[in-house]
Image 1 (cartoon, rainbow, N blue to C red):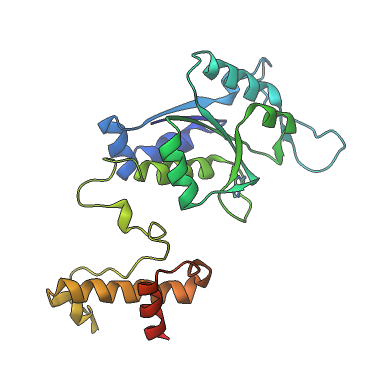
Image 2 (tube, rainbow, N blue to C red):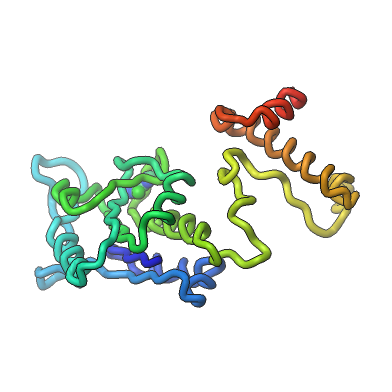
Length: 238
Ligand code: 6GU
């Protein structure tokens, strides 16, 4: 899968993607990330990308030209790609949307804005507007990284054998169970006995119970479509 990122801060993207799961996926050739500096697509000699808002008000607005020029440059190869504009006004990004992007898009363009906003007319050239949550960030770069990271984890082969996306929180519709590693006893805080028992059936049931308990405590909104089996376990917990 290929990601192309349009930003005025290429280093933010380039630094993050080198590490961990993403870095490995890039080395394996499962993913390709190309970062474009919007300043390279200005016709202005000062490489200016923003200007004052029509109608007045605080802050600057990113101009359409660099976005338009960059998008036309990418589209010149005529290969299909999904163009996503990152903005707090977008459709909310979820694990489900990450799965959809992984399955349906071979190539995605992630368009990052800065300042107070982007000229509205940029939207005429994109397929979707996406937000990563109900808070405001100073730019789309973190959002682009969130999307790249979560989508890449879902690509078969991106996670090593020792990891599985299926085990992750949200993949199964609720939060993860607690994890422990050595030491068995840290200043009197002991690893739950069941995890040392070697009884895999018992361990699986304990983990399911804990996952449901975590979800009930922190994210009860996720417990809408439980299977009858999970519902039974949840009732036992209450
Ligand atoms: Cl995609 N961009 C910005 N600037 N803020 C956000 C966001 C995106 N998603 C949530 N907050």
